[in-house]
Amino acid sequence: MALARIIDGRAFAAGILAEVTAETAELAAAGVVPGLAVVLVGEDPASQIYVRNKARTTKEAGMASFEYRLDAETSERDLLALVAELNDDPAVHGILVQLPLPRHIDSARVLDAISPDKDVDGFHVINAGRLAAGLPGLVPCTPLGCLLMLKAELGDLSGARAVVLGRSNIVGKPMAALLLRESCTVTIAHSRTRDLAEECRRADILVAAVGQPELVRGSWIKPGATVMDVGINRVAGEGGKTRLVGDVAFAEALEVAGRITPVPGGVGPMTIACLLRNTLTAAKRIA
Ligand code: NAD
Image 1 (tube, helix red, strand yellow):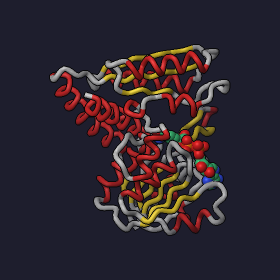
Image 2 (cartoon, protein in one colour):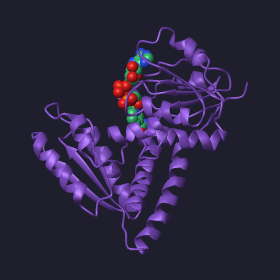
Image 3 (tube, protein in one colour):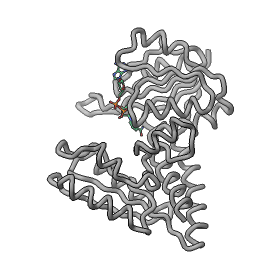
Image 4 (cartoon, protein in one colour):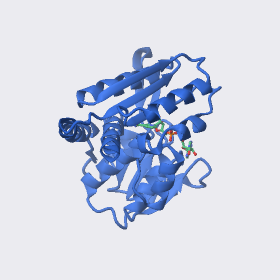
């Protein structure tokens, strides 16, 4: 059998960013420059890289970028006060508080303090509820990116059997809700699922978001299935270096699947593209 087609997330993301940039220019010409505020608390190195990349891409798309770097000792009260200020700021259309937050801060309380209309991460309980109820709202960026690629690759998803591995509020649950909205038959599998391999083998569409390096083996994949690998895991590589792998054993999966996203270069680039797409959506709605 031929090897799976590798889905190029970077190319998809570039296409979305080009559309967002063009629409941003139109909106700016009409007097509204979409603005994204990103708040980072503490010095987590991975978060610093994410925040830097988000700010750069925001500016490249012609949007206004507002960065807030607060020290690790910032109190929850001060963070909530900043969120309230940003909620009221007419130049800010999207607010993103970078996770994880230091342990003395209640993340859920902070995320729910963000105005649902500016919640471009889609983590607010109101937006989670809207998604579950099939109402329009802001949708979490990573599952949205997966869905856009799936629809572009496969067209109508109606009736497909989809299995989502992982049930986090950030990826697994919203991914399952989006696939249900597309009329897939959806199974959510997780750490307590009895026979993970058997569940996976039923999937026409398999989305892996568990954070376990190469958990999904080639033998777990239905021949011809479409595999979206959300996992980003750093493992030991050659010569003492580290390398990134997904939640799927890529080389094995390539022999069985019909289409597959690589790690890196698959789902990852779509997350930031969808963040800016959400910021544009929020700006248009607010304007
Ligand atoms: P999480 O830790 O919040 O959730 C992991 C989920 O996987 C849980 O629901 C758990 O039940 C399930 N799980 C864990 N071990 C399992 C096992 N052995 N078998 C079956 N299920 C298991 O993680 P998350 O935030 O949803 O992220 C998942 C992965 O996706 C991580 O690797 C993360 O780095 C990555 N991620 C990537 C992007 C991106 O932009 N590509 C964005 C967000 C998360």
